[in-house]
Amino acid sequence: MSPTAPMVETLVSPAAHAQRQLATDDGAIDSLDAAHGGVQNALYTYDTDAGTRTRSLQEGWQGSSADRQAADATSMSTAAKDISTYSADVQGAVREAAGILKVGQSTNQQLIDNFMDRAAELLSAAAALRQAGDTAGAQRKLSELVRLGAQVSGDSSTNMQAVMGQLTDVVTRLDAADGKTSASGAHGGSGHTAPAAYNTGGGGGGGGGGGGDYGGGGGGGMVTKKRLPVAIPPQPGTGVAINLPDGSQVMAPNETAAKAVRAALTQLGVPYVWGGTAPGVGLDCSGLTQYAYGEAGLDIPRTSGEQDIGAEVPSADQLMPGDLICWEGHVAMYIGDGQMIEAGDPVEISPLRTTNMGMPFVGFYRPTG
Image (cartoon, rainbow, N blue to C red; front, side, top):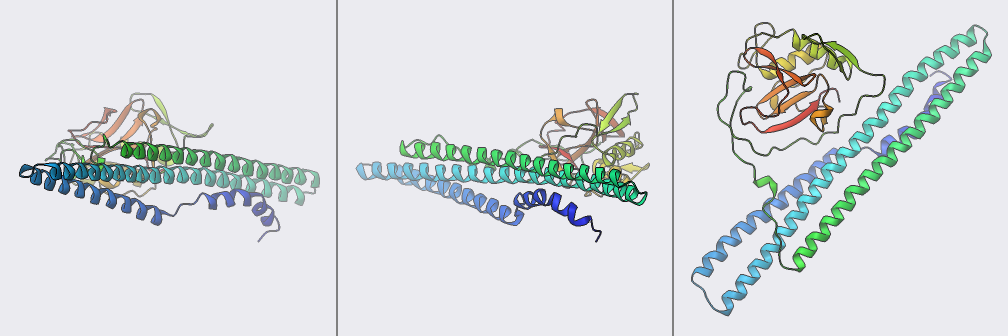
């Protein structure tokens, strides 16, 4: 270990400590998420079964006892729905908190990585100056390193405070939801419906002609999304330029995304082939995106249903070239200027959209994070 290595470790240790504090236990989060899903399922099943039995009893039962039983059944149904609703609120809060932590963790790691890169440059320069006899110049480089260390520690602390503030907001909203649920129960009226997990909408039918890979069209409906961090906005001075076929120029967030877009554009006009993975011969939608990112040095999963990876881009106005647009059964790549490239028949550039033959839309994703 070089004699300056302890200095670097000392400078970044506060940021590294914050990084450890922001770490998430994905296994525990997934277990809690599944447990609350089980609670909602059990309560919804209970409420449905109890409602059916109550209606059956009331058909042939009258009088004060029947009225009392009906009131008790209504009260129990209200309580079950309130508990189920609060369980869903907790489940959502856990997912949101995990996403906040992951973004904070990623931001801290980026701060540390950037500092380490710059520290290596400064230490190398200081060593060269010392070897050349310029002690004062070497000292200036080391002083700059100290200032950078203080800055990264401060930035990390600020990031951690922001994360804690967001987590506090999540808890505050959850407490407010608990208060509403309790008030609803106290007054005997819930106004709740079945948990959203049961209102999943229609299924899908056959597809083709570029409609999707391993399946196609169909009705919409809700989708279950992976718990992923939010994509970090590009920092000032970053970005890689890409020239599009129409002569316009766009900026990708990094070199990997830029290479993926360039590789995808080389396949314009290639025929659509279901299950196709042969560039220049035949590609399906995920075959195109997998090939493009493979050419950029990033291995992504084979099917569209698995390509919602990296980080989630919250909205269309935050999309950058290389981001993937995912449906249940189809995937396309955003190339900038409101356009995307996809394996239609043939591979073509299309205006950005979030509808595709009735398929449920999953979201926007940045494989490079």
